[in-house]
Image (cartoon, rainbow, N blue to C red; front, side, top):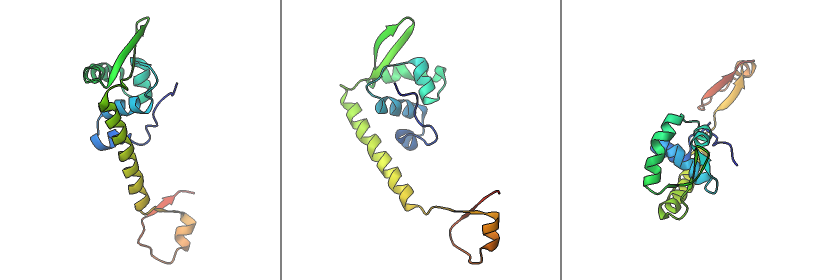
Length: 134
């Protein structure tokens, strides 16, 4: 079972909608065949358990996720792959990710220089210069 989403960068829907709910939805879209407890969802999305407890009923009422079973006191949830909204959200997730990828390719990459390289540099460039301490 996958552990967690890489939260270094915002997830596609979170990038667009700027919310924790979007992060939870992206998690369920990315790992749509697995079941998760509330605690596992909180750990995987690096979200507080209280937020997960607050958001899951909304996602369940809208048919995004389904309660699959209980293991002891743990309630397990999974993506509702039968819901047509999920198919549209998956397409949207892919399109957002492709758009973000295209945007990063078009942006000029900053030039990384050490202090010695900056001292040697005689030509002024229009690119931003980031220094690395040596």
